[in-house]
Length: 87
Image (cartoon, rainbow, N blue to C red; front, side, top):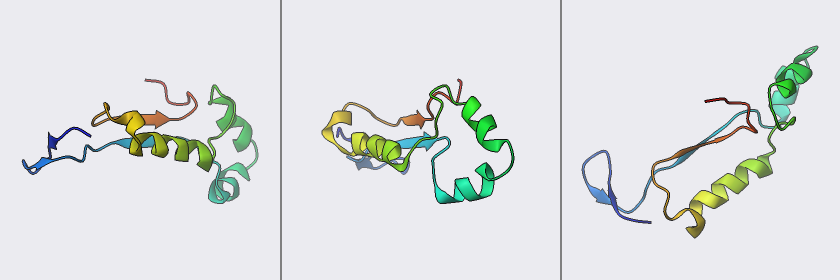
């Protein structure tokens, strides 16, 4: 990664990134949200891809950011939402 200045004004080589997942298929989501009548259909209708993200979907984004594939990307937040978040 290219060197950059951090928030404290010191020179560093680590460039921050983040990702913002929408609905990820987890036991807690299934238990707390999708167990309620009609919620599964409502949530999935809001996602253009028609499905929740899997933990593997999220891990692919993390893998991208921590490998050389992203070495020209700096300070970005990637929305991992299947199109659910409309900007």
